[in-house]
Image (cartoon, rainbow, N blue to C red; front, side):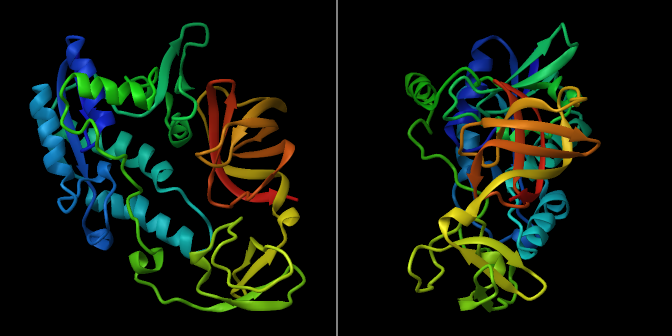
Length: 354
């Protein structure tokens, strides 16, 4: 089988490619380059092709060791238009988007392999180093996206927007492994980046600096509108944030909301950070949309484990009631729905239910 592997300068994609090559497949490696336009000076995570951090040279070394061709694909224009501008607008609107959730369906599993096909590169499957699984279910006649076997490393949360058409062409070789297994495999096979640190987000500095926007200061207020202090621009805060408020109070305060009309940051005590549920829109159902309310599990942050909820779907919207109240439900973040290890779908949080 001819397989195109999304290569970065990191260990995960290198091991994925090496495993597939060892299984007898014909492998090509390809790397995205997203820099250009508004983000040309950003600091890099390894999957984005930064010359400054040596990622491209590491990716080439990985391909040389594996014995496969290396392709560098410039998707910077598309990334600016489809991901970065939306990411910027969401942040400046006091929402909390996730760049990987935006990038995966549009760029990594969309524009990126399409551009390679347009250059004449042919392949049967597209593989990445994500810790997730994709399996065909004959009974459903559909592809299922599953959590990685190691739930602590699972990355299915970032992939909920994938369609049946995309899933039919995807391989996740690392889905049955944990990070220790992968590093051990890399060391045993003399992969140069075996001990390299995991990559960070596509930008590691101040978002105000990245967006090159004017910081519009305003009031920090309690839920009754009483002024408690001054904030440094709403886009510098997230729901549930405690540190950096610089407000003297009898007990710790947390960000619970944004009054964008009056440029006020709303804070309160811990108990006011909890919600009973949420509404989400732009839902992508990997499997069939539920026709009635169902018991399921949900993640509202990538780092947490799924928790129980009651899920009700309506067209492109979803209403979720948590079995146990949850803190820091942030508009703009992804809500991803599960049935055990199976990803049902997901969407974008619009508001919490208090």
